[in-house]
Length: 439
Image 1 (cartoon, rainbow, N blue to C red):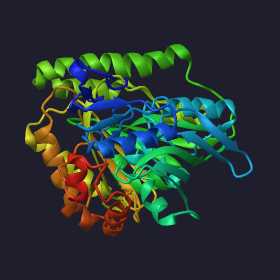
Image 2 (spheres, rainbow, N blue to C red):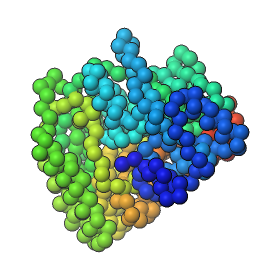
Image 3 (tube, rainbow, N blue to C red):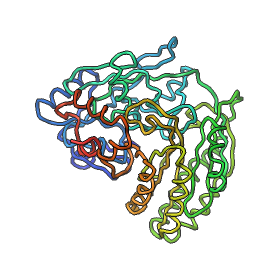
Image 4 (cartoon, rainbow, N blue to C red):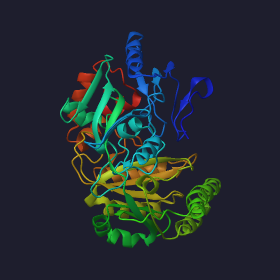
């Protein structure tokens, strides 16, 4: 599922298949010193530098024609501090391996996204999040960071050390330096009871505030062309553990959610007129279920059907209105959308360019099956989201630029000033950063 290491003639591609780049050279450093040396060498050769994780961003945030740094040798847990309940992990560690290693140690992150293929640094640098009433994104759980800056020096930051760098670098977009290690807050492993059940779209919107307030982690999927949603409520539980039986899990998570869904999308791509009928069936395929397990087995699920995605963060108070507008738009547009719309929430945080920075947030994510034209749908959806002062996910498709971000992020100037200080020669620049942060 990772991006192609060396595709044809040294071409790098992302997971969604919509971004490719041809770097001048690739480096796979085995230590922080080697990484710092690679950055200094790039400067001597007048090349820009980008670290790439597993390519799960749909934007060209990691693309470079300069030096491509692959962090796969910088993996594993450096240290666990049980007194302060933190774990320090190398930047290239996949979330999947971190979650499993923590579980073996009887520990867990408080919250996580629904995909765990990404590296910890790739996921946090782009603001990857799950859903939570009180607990925020993966980056909001960071207690300290180590990064190699443009001059090849190693900088550590936390609330106490270089706090202005810490405020920004937790979601740094790869613009401030290359993250080499992250210290996360952890807690003793706990159990979650997941309750998944279908619910009419209108009822979810009418009861949204209640559903949000009464659950630690609430999210739902709405199936366009239907009035149906699938809701998920995850709450802490005293146990006992009651995992999804293996066969049922395979049937629901692999066969229905990945296998049949893949075929349905192939049919829909070939014959778009069939999509509304397929959506009616898809939206009723998964029946209600309740299970109890450790966090990563509840929060995360496999995503094997490839897609492209746009996701916007809107103020939580605006989400119901934005969703009504989205449904009206789809109903009137003649568009054929085979992928559900995913809705999640996050509390306000204090990270400079976090999509939840300074405001209680709801996320609306729209997807299209890989290889289907998505521009018309995404453009119409983006028009709705931006009318509500939406902030796009940094790793998902959007058309916004620095001028727009300076309006929706009160602390935007704080980030660009720090970037001027840490990377005056734009060693970590690429086309995407030029667009979203300005020249």
